[in-house]
Length: 338
Ligand code: CP
Image (cartoon, rainbow, N blue to C red; front, side, top):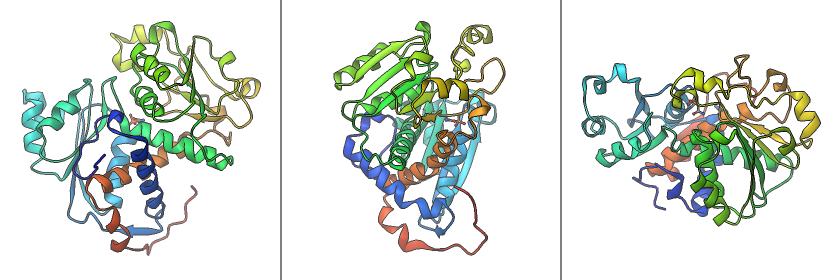
């Protein structure tokens, strides 16, 4: 696809070669994300970072990614601090804010809302999550993480990947986008573990099968954990349920801890989660006793979000070839553990 000037709304926009290109550019961003080099390639550019749903990682890492490329960030969080609370339409909001920004990232609780906003925007819009629909930058950083974790184990091929997705697969937009992304690869084995009421939407299951992948569905976690490379846990998406009581019916149904990992997983199985993990006692889908497990990749996964989001900005704003030309070494204390 042509990245320059494009909206990034769905994984469906991409072909496999686009993914390889994004990952190559993300790799190029490592010295900047690791604070060894600084670049001013987006000096003067403004990101409108508009989050109408709670976010820690996506909002801050998109903002940091833009700052790390030398740009400035203007942010709106929550409907209450936006004129949408006064009845302004997404169309008007998009027309106005795209006059103030060079690129916009948006998160919104309604499926399709970011695409609706993008249709009225005069600058590229990146989907930071639209309801239960998609979270494309998360899927990209997830697959980038999977690739890196497997490379660390000496595997250089995403084809033949074996992954289990666990939890709320009905409302989890990260797993929806990840399934679409996996369809670009070959011979993937996908195990979908959820209560029947929170199963992966059937159209996505069919897509995986049409891509030639093996798909197994179960509502039991432990027996499905053997023979997988990646264990991708997810939170019950409480915000999509009618009320807390309904979410409580499913919360805590699947809990991975070190004892279960040791008993059921292969020794190198990588543990992932888009985060936030729900650490309340009644949920606790990934126990804190996994924190010292070297295969717990959740914080490396979150770190990789900056690289992938820097890559998306550089590609959409068409400055990939200028990043290094506008760079210098950093002159402050930078020692940190990655
Ligand atoms: N993974 C993710 O989207 O996290 P946030 O909700 O904190 O952005």
